[in-house]
Length: 456
Image (tube, rainbow, N blue to C red; front, side, top):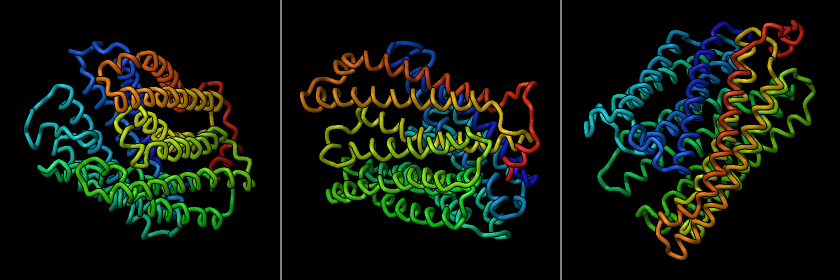
C-alpha cells in the first residue's frame, strides 16, 4: 500500500462484506419460501425478505465501488485522497440510511408518509429522508474523488471511473421523480435502474477491471487504455438506447420495441470485449503475480458477465420473444447471473486484491478464496440453468396455454427445490470468501518479497 489514505477503503470493504452476507442469506431465505410458501409468512413476509435481498445487493455493490475508487484513485492520481474525513462521513451517512430503510420496511413504520414511510417502488422504495441522505453522500463522494483526480495525474482508468461515478450519482436524482402517470413513473424508474446497471456501472466495471489487470498482469498501460476506451464507447452506445427493452409494455409508443430490440442486441458487445480484454491481458502479461485468487476472480467476473448479462440478456431481449417471456423465471435467471458476474465477482476481485495490502499482508488463504469462487460460480450457473428451464415451461404453460399463475407455480416446485440447493452452495461459498478475507491464520507466513510484489 503506497498511500495512507487508501486505508479508508478497508472500512467500506468491511461494511460491504457484512451486507454481502445479509444479501446472500436473504436470498437463501427467499429461495426457501418458493419451496415452502407459508414459511415465516407472518413474521417475515416474502415482500420484506425480497426487499432485504435486493436492497442489500445494491447497497453493498455501491459500497464496494466507492471503496474501490478510494483504493485505486490514489495510485492512479499519485496523491492522497483529498479528504479522508469526508470519505468516512460519506460512509456513515450511507450506513445510517441503510439501517433506517431496513427498520422502516421491516416494521412498516410511517405508512403513507411521504418523508418517513417507504415509497413502494422496487429497488428505490427508501423513505425520502434516506434518499436525501444518499444524495448528500453522493455529492460528498463526487467532490472528494473529483478533487483527488484534478490535483493529480490523469489516466484513462481514473477518467473513465470518474465519468461512470458522476453519471451513477447524478442519475439518482430520477429516484425523486414519482409522477401519477404509471407509464411516466416506469420510464423515470428505468432511468435509474437500467442506466445504472447497463450503462454507468459498466463504466465503473471496466475501469476497475482495467486497474486490476494492469496490476496483476504487468501489461503496458497504453494497451490497457486502448481496450478501455473501446469498451466504454460500446457500453454507452448500446446501453443508453438499450433502455428501450424495458419500455416495450409500459404504455410507451410502439417504436420503442424496435429501438429496444436493436440496441439491446448491441449490449452483448461491451461484455464480449471485456471478457476478451481480460484474457488477452493475461496472455500478454509479463508478471507472475502472487495473488492468484484476485486474478481468478477478475477473469471469472468478465466471463460470467458475458454469459449472464450478454448471452442470457439477449435470449429474451427481442420484443417478439419478450412479449411472452417478460416477468417469468427467465428474467430471474438473467438477473442473477448478470449481477453475479458483472458486479458481485468484480467487487470480490477488488477485495481479494486490496484487502491483503490494506492489512499489510501478502495474499493469504488463497486456496479457500479460490474454492469460494468455484462454489459460488458453480452454484450460480446451476441456478441460472434451473431458472431458465423453469421460465421456459412457465412461458409456455402460462403465456401460451393460458393456465393460471398459481397452478403453473405449483408445477415448477421441483425447479424451486433445485434452485434452493444451488443457492445453498452460493451461500456457503460467500461465507467461505468472507472467512478467507478476514481470518489470517497464526501460522500464515508473510514473505516480505511476496508483499513487495503484491504492492507493485
